[in-house]
Structures are given as C-alpha cells and as structure tokens.
Amino acid sequence: MNSMTGYGKGSNVTDAVHYIAEIKTVNHRYIDVSVKLPRSLMFLETEVKNWVSAYLHRGKIDVYISREGDSAELMKPQLNETAAAAYVDIYKQLIKRFNLAEDIPLSMLAAQKEVVVLSEPQIDETNVRERLKEAVTEALAAVVQMRGAEGRSMNNDIVARLQVLEEYLGSIEHRTPQVVAEWQQKLQRRIEALVHEVEVDPQRLAQEVAVFADRCDISEEVVRFKSHIEQMHGLLANPGAVGRQMDFLLQELNREANTMGSKSNDAELTRNVVALKAELEKIREQVQNIE
Image (tube, helix red, strand yellow):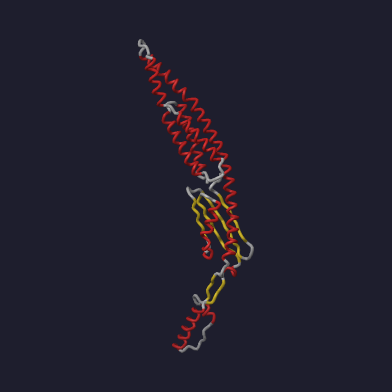
C-alpha cells in the first residue's frame, strides 16, 4: 500500500550545467501530472510525464525541472548583424542629412536593442534526455520510498481499526436476539397490565413478536458487512493501487451501517452502530490518501 503524499529530489551534476528534478505529490481522485520545465527543455515534457506515470499511478503530481550552472554555458551573447547593419545605415543617414562630423561610437552601436542578444547554445538532445531522466528517476525513487513508508503506517492503522469494527459488529450480533426477547417480555407485561382479567393469546403474541423481529432483523446487513471487511483485508495485502476499491468498499460498509441503525430499536444497539460509523469515518479519512 502506498500513500499519495510524497516528495523527492534528484540531480545530475556531471559538469558545469546541473539538471535538478523535484517532485511533490498529494492525493487526487485520478493521476494528474503537471511538469514545469525551462523553455529550452520543453521538448521533453511528454517524456517526463511518461517517466512519472511509470512509477506513480494516482495523485496530483507536480514536477519541477531546473537547469543551473555557469551562465556562460547556459546563455551566450551573439551579434545580430542584420540589426547592427540597420543601425549603421541609420547613423550614416543622420550624419549625411545633418552634416555631422562625429563617427559612430562602438559603445552606442552595441547598446542598441537587439544588436547584441543572449541566446542559449544548441544542446545535445540525446545527452540532455539521458541526464534529465537520471535526475527524474532519482527523485521518483525518493517519492516512492516516502509514499511507501507512509503507506505502511496507514496500513497498520487501518488494520487496527478494522479489528475495532469487528469487535463492534460482534457486540451488535450478540445484542440483536436479546432485543427481540426483551421486546416480547415487555409487550407481554404491558398487555397483562392493561387487561388483568383477559388471558393473553400466545398465538397473537407470537405473531406480533415475529413482525417485530422481521422489522429489526439485520442478519443480512451483518453478513454483507463481514464480507466487505474481509475484502478490505484482502486489499490491504495487495501491493497495487487499491485506493479507489477501498473507497468503494467503505461506501458499502457505510450503507450497511446506516441500514442497521435505521432498524435499531434499542439504545445499546444504536450506540454500537454509531461507534461503528465513527470508526468507518476515520478509515475513510485514511483511504482518501491511498494510491
């Protein structure tokens, strides 16, 4: 089991230019990968998403890629000859038109917009791809490790809470037949108290008790609840992405618990059902962050 919360950082620093990858993940219903790259590396955006999706299967995943190092390696000044020639022609026209004797200062020409421009050098795409993949893979390994560690902790917590659910369910099963027997005794006493001189019809009393027992019968809900818990245990032992399946099972467990509560005609039974639902809510909070 893996959590959907994690962070990892990886880098490739084999020369003056460093490639750094940072990955942050949080819970999300599906997988949503967002990649932020320098403009010069935009051609790798789809590949980075594919690298990430091979490791992580669910969550909101933000990937930040940076390229750092010696600025001379990253940006180089280049002469824009076309712009420089255009400025020289304009200066010559000005000198001739206004009969100026001053030569064209080099500093003035170089200071004009677009005459000297900074541009990124051509990069070896194959080399960059390999180096960036190494950085991203290192970051992903750290994310997977963190998500796995938190997942194990969540697994232990859910196992403990499932045990609590089974204990509450056992109390509900034990209490249910007592509720019917107590209601039968209470009904009989009420009838006897109201009509001292009339003998109670055992058959009619049995019919009323049968109707009451059928109305508050939760045996089917208990069986289904047990089945869902068994399936939860099975998913906890599954190494894959099980978050959505667990979320669905929790909805079913809540449905059974609500039905048990609506059929309850006993204070003790109701308390156990309420406690059951409280534990289910705590499990649901954990499951929301499971991959």
